[in-house]
Image 1 (cartoon, one colour):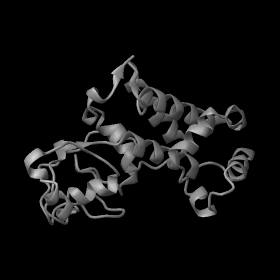
Image 2 (cartoon, rainbow, N blue to C red):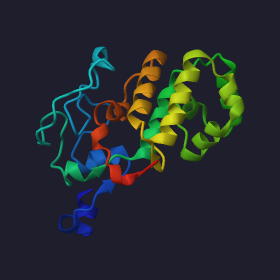
Image 3 (cartoon, helix red, strand yellow):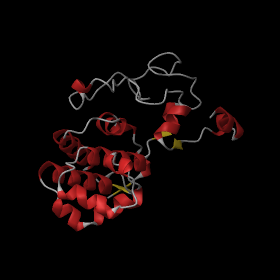
Image 4 (tube, rainbow, N blue to C red):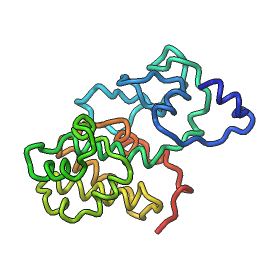
Amino acid sequence: MKIPVEAINYDKFKWQICGDLKVIALLLGLKQGFTKYCCFICEWDSRDRSLHYSRKDWPTRKSLEPGIMNVENQPLVEPSKILLPSMHLKLGLMKNFVKVMNQEEAVFTYLREKFLRLSETKFKEGIFIGPQIRDIIKEEYFDKLLQGGEKAAWHSFKFLVKGFLGNRRAQNYEELVNNLLQSYQKLGCNISLKIHFLQSHLDFFPRELWCSE
């Protein structure tokens, strides 16, 4: 990553960066994979599941120093220049939702039949792309098949996509985020890095990227 960063004279212009979280981790010098301290903003312990959902505030990272808290290399960009990618968060939330769905229910079978070209591995892991997610959101029959906690979680996901992860930020976006966190917790979703950003770092999302409703 150092070669392209130097080639575009990033140190001179210091643009803001928005991209895949794996790429962002590389730019910030963080180790790849399921690491304990994978958040570049705070000292969140991703492996302590006993604190998932119950703890929101974590100590802020004082620095990204190699050898400390999963930092492997010297950062190439400043953390303050990072923009969290709303599309990547949406893909992650969809993945969390599908992975805890009851695979014996008709709704799961319906999804499998709807996306026949999707490999079994990707399907079970909930790896859907943007157009597929938009297609499911518009599908009324899928909504009717859902029941109980799955239906509540799906509705909270749809509202969050429209009111926070889309082109516009709703005035009640904090309520939408809290509703999603509560419904995902009841459904049994583990907190991923994407969910952690929503739970603990809403203030890191810049307002200027959205137009208020």
